[in-house]
Length: 84
Image 1 (cartoon, rainbow, N blue to C red):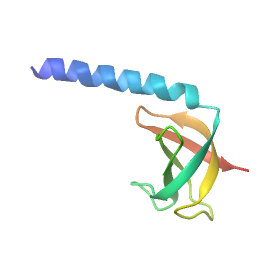
Image 2 (tube, one colour; image 1 turned 90 degrees about the vertical axis):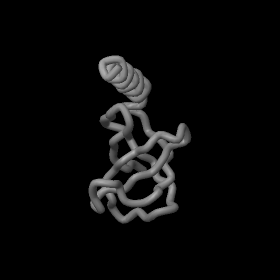
Image 3 (cartoon, rainbow, N blue to C red; image 1 turned 120 degrees about the horizontal axis):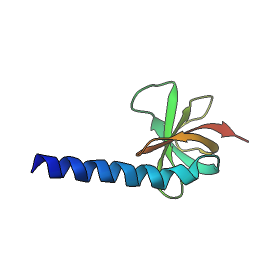
């Protein structure tokens, strides 16, 4: 039973990563939700596809829209930098 669960989790992780990889290198409009879970030096928001995007804080604040160039991803998160 545990082995099957681990197989399903691994498959889900792989599929999620495959869905996020095409977003790398693209600019996304992101609504800032607040600080990231790991650091107050980074902000977290969601793009129009409701994917979580993490980027450096800069002078931006919760509730603003910013354009973020995605440079990396994990199975659950897109990572990037704010662009004009």
